[in-house]
Image 1: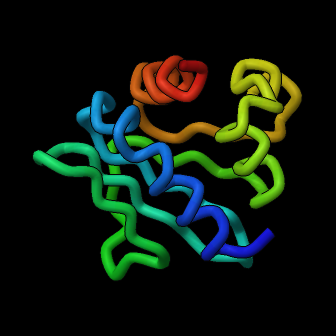
Image 2: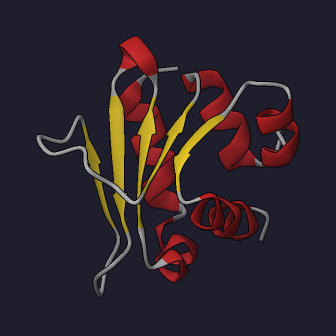
Image 3: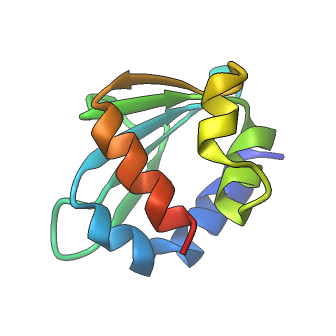
Length: 102
């Protein structure tokens, strides 16, 4: 699983992610980072951003990221099992989780 595949999948889901209305940084460890900015009129998805400040940061592996986006991994289970770490607003993470479940 590479960063380009993850960004591509996020872009496919951009329309429903627009409702998030917040910024989320996905930290994929050595594979890089992806910034999701859903605060404007359109969703901006930036791989390895220069500025990685976000309201919420999610730390997970690229494999688990794809499973979350495809609905193959429940975010609450991932968090409980330590596969997903959340820094910043837990409320934004929960909102993102509900959007991905749609």
